[in-house]
Structure formats: structure tokens, C-alpha cells
Length: 343
Image 1 (spheres, one colour):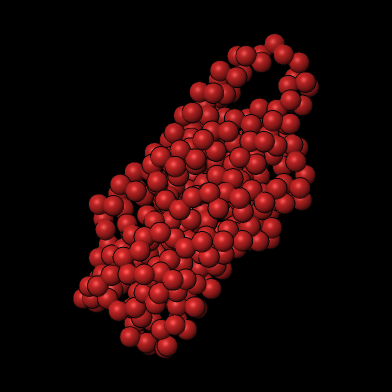
Image 2: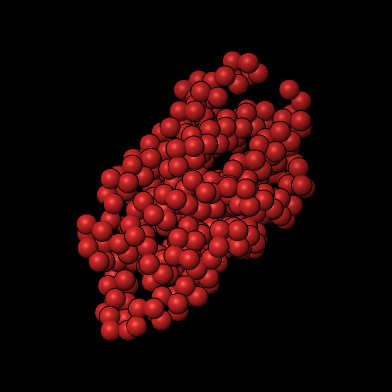
């Protein structure tokens, strides 16, 4: 296949992944605000789309991690690099659609990392000069994967306990009204953080596809993400956000714990903080889904550990655990198919 045509196809698939990411993960930013009545569903989805667009324009450090720190494929041909990226994308898209169908808030972040590792492993087993950067994966992926939900749960639990003491004697109707209003801002902040984190994964993939053929003026050794890629990824995740999310909104908004406006506010505020800190200071591609879900569970546990619906949470955690190997397996299979047919 002509390498420039292949690069174009890979970039288009990366944009589809970005749109599916918005479609699949839109619920993370708005589920709590809709459930507590702070925002109507249509208004919340439009707000999330706009804030995702703005957030996606705010940084590229996470994109650089995806492009450079997961798989080293610089020693193989442009065609091999492109087939690896498209196999990884198909692995991630396939797993995202499976979990969306079953209403499970799985992680697009870890799906694409699993897809990259699976496709890279297929090439490594075949004896090609492709290597998975295990040390970097542990530092930039595994450690944040474990820490972000723990921090989200613990911080939300602590803040909710303190907040409950502060508002204990306050008028419940008035406090509900106040926190519903506050949720408009925290849910917007969370959508901004989602765009900042998740669009960058697609930027990194598009850069991996464009670099071998010099699209968008990329030169050998360049690490800066071109503005054209940033803009396309931003628009794709915003359009995707407008299209989906209802199944997962139901799971996040009602099946983990009973949400009050106070709990929704705390869960959104904590999740936003974790997303921004990880993007700007740690440069780690963490999962919006993991962070939000754990923060919601933390607010529920502040009342009573039994207030958390652990059976639902167990299903979600199982989906998290199998995301990387499942997306990796799909990516591995596609890479094997491409290698047999085209390489």
C-alpha cells in the first residue's frame, strides 16, 4: 500500500478513535451534574463538548508521552510504523465499543496503551526491531493507573467528611440549591480536564502516523506536535462528545452510590484537580474514567461504607483490570493480520 495513503488512513482512524473517546467518555464529566439535577442532559452535553474542545487546545505534554514513551519503533520502516499504529487504534476502538455496549465506564487511555503494547509485542515476537519501553510504561502508565483512583477515592472521602461536618446544621434545601449551582462550574472544569487529558492521546497517535512521512511539515527528530494535529484532535473529541454517553451516565450517576449535589460537587472538583495536576505537572496519561468513578465512590463511603454499591464497583474495577490486556490482544491480532497480508 502507498505509504502516504496509509498514513492518511491511520490519521483518519485516529480521529475516529478521538471521536469515539468523546462519545464513550463524555459521561464522565457530566453524569453527576445530570443525576443531581444541576444540569439538563442536553445542556450538559453541549457544555461538555465546548469545554472538551477548549481543554484539548491547552497542552501537548501527554501527547508526547504517547508518541515517545510506550513503544520504540523508530528502527523499522514507515510502513511498519503505520500498520502498528492502526492496529493499536483498532484494538482500542474495539474494546471501547464493547464496554460502551455493556455500559461499563472503561478507560480509553488504557485501551490505547494496551493496543500499542499488543501491536508492539506482535512485531517484537516476529523479530522486528520494535521494543516496548517497559520502564517508561511502569513510570508513566502503571504507577498513575494505580495511584489516580486511590487519590481520587481518598481525597473525595476526606473532603466529603469535612464538608458534612460544616453543613450538618444547615438548611438542606438551601445547601442543595447552592451546590447544584456550584456543580455547573465543577462539571465544566471536569470536562475541560477530560479534553486536556484525552484528546492528547489521539494527538500522540496522529503524530506517530504523520512523522514517518513528514506530514504537516514534521521533520526528522521533531518532538513538537504541529498545530494542525492539535486542532483536528480537539474538534474530533468535541464532536464525539455531542454524540454519546447515555448508557454510562446511568452507571456513573446512579449505580455506584446515591448522589446528592454536595457529593456531585466534591467528586467533580477532586477529579478535575487530579486531571490537571497529572497533565501539567506529572505529564502522565491518566484515566478520566478511573478518577471520576473512584471519586464518586469516595463521596458515597463518607456516609457509610455500605452506601457504595460494591457489586457495581467490582464490575467496573474488573473492566479496568482487563482493559489493557483485552485491547492489547485485539491490537496484537490486527497487527498479525496486517503483517500476513501487507508486510
